[in-house]
Length: 307
Image (cartoon, rainbow, N blue to C red; front, side, top):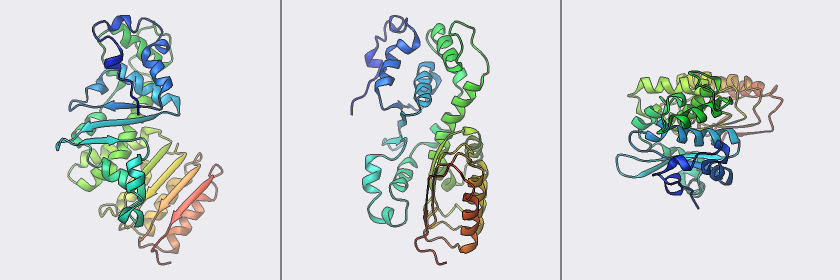
């Protein structure tokens, strides 16, 4: 794959000459237009999330509606970790073999295991990001970018608050909340972060939620209830893999209740292989889906369930 790197493509000793034109005519925007997505490479201090040009690139990725956003860093063991927008080629290959293929969520399960190595300390910093607080070497750049995000004249004074700021922040936090949910649930020793993830999911507004919790001993009925309370109602695509989790009909009913409120839901996947459930939970789920007018397809995995 080919990558466009702003630090190499722009003269870092004379950035002013690189960004004198309209934002949408800058090299940043032109590169984004040609790309399939954006990769944020994050250091230990998460500096990229404090820089307004990085915020501009992420915002442009979000608003395009078609580009991917991946986040890469290095963990304490010195290994690269990537939170990817969807499954990677590696996930697709490894996820169709062995236990992943049988009951651990397939490619999505492999993705979840891979992303569990993302440093939690760095994730906490990501959840604190506020684009309106981002900095720039040139204050004019900061003003132009923040006004562009808000959809107002770039020459106007910077707004302290705006719905567009909230939408950007909430979506970024939501992406991390989904990617880190399993890791935080397994750790059990950071309840504050666990609560923060729920808060982020509730306000995220993200339309695509793919959560693989296969064989997670910590995901019980109580946790399922908490999760279902905060799943974004704007979901168009929801995939929940609960294979081999210690849940009952109560959890399935909670999933159904959450789904019933997703009026724009188009694609639904619920995997319940090897769970101790019976007809009661499934009936509640089926009833909840009956009035979803936008639903195009539904996949329900009941492998190994004794009905």
